[in-house]
Length: 433
Image (cartoon, rainbow, N blue to C red; front, side):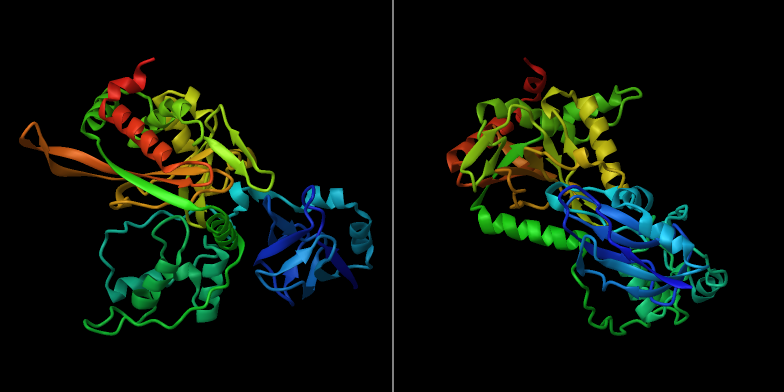
């Protein structure tokens, strides 16, 4: 037996340190060569670290959330055999180690990332979220045959371990087990039956360490609010005509993707921007330079299980509504399943953020630094409106925009939204040269 020290390899140009976002081993665990041991996050990517030799873990560098330097000890392994495997591992260069033991998982715009699940088996069938809770007898029957592998984030796994819950007994409402699924199991599926009517819903306090993607989101949003003097402007738009057009387009789409409101909104955004170049811009406040971009690389804020991500529609101004619909679907899926590439998550010049049916009355979205504006359509609702002295039912939507007041004046923001309003209320103009 011999002790092999596995140092954190060089995992990217210019990277000096990385954050431990998930441990898949602990001291005393046995690992085989190439077993996954940890997920490490840098400013550019999340990578999986794999064991270079087989043996037993005798030391680890720190806890989840700790940051360690490149070249410092990540784990120590009591290697098997006469030490030849460990010596062979020591002789490898950092480049070789990198190619063998690190696999990019996901990169993010504004230095975000997603936490990886500890194991990646085939997903279990989804459960109907609207179905009633099963009776106690059915719950107990479902618990009789635990599964060896489940999909869950490290945070959920740790909480389940602390509570002594076998995650193979927890039913997921989606592809991954979430905290809500664990809560439902604790309330109904742990052998205690249904909660008696009127019983307390109080839960114990839970302290969660802010690490990984959530830490990056917190840092980026704080930096944005700290540096950018935000202001927001909201106006109401009559979406009745464009909604009618959308229905006609979908009725005749053939095998093309279904059109939501977003592709039409993006066409309007791009068509109005040439008259307002100060909005499609980035601001380097340290150099005192504003770059007004000719192309519209539109960031599309997307909610994932790990947090908010912003995939980018490149050259949105050159795409038609069908191409935009296809790209929206492709990028949203890539962001949610962790397959988005680096160039699909960076380089946006303007951002569109929509909460869809949860859109509310108005939003004041936070700008993605170094951009200078972000646009937020809200929920479309049918309300009465007086037109030519008559009350008519119309489909109305509030449109929000937040801007960097160092670069964009309030008059410019209001004028741009009025231009969008004109295009959307007269949708034939969306397709006019």
